[in-house]
Length: 159
Image 1 (cartoon, rainbow, N blue to C red):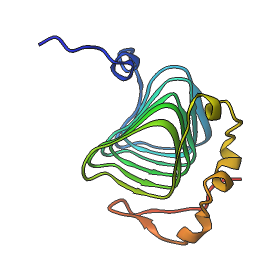
Image 2: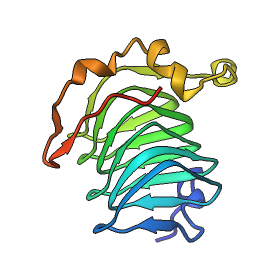
Image 3: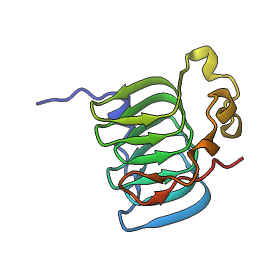
Image 4: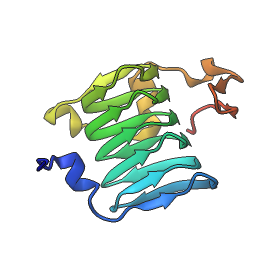
């Protein structure tokens, strides 16, 4: 069967950088232009001009900005995406999403607010430090909770 390439599958075709299942990485910011797959735990912000995949065993605690994002694991923070965000059936997102296109599979969980962007709003300065207020989401309300099934504490968003 010949599968038509979409922008999402084409973006994922180049060899990604992989953060493995048994790896915990803490950093102020992860940035780049090549695809990144997170199957382990990443604590910090992600700023990509490319494709980000958070695998089923992956978790990110921090703000995420990328051109295209697919989440099968857990993300705790604000997600800003100029293209498509896809939440698979195993995805768990705690925080806000600002994107042009949001695709959710049955079973995906999202606790927070979503803002749909268009070409005009995409050009508005969506600084990660500002997005918390733009989405009217107070991360301090999350308290000392744990992300379900991970044991990972929910922490306040970085300012």
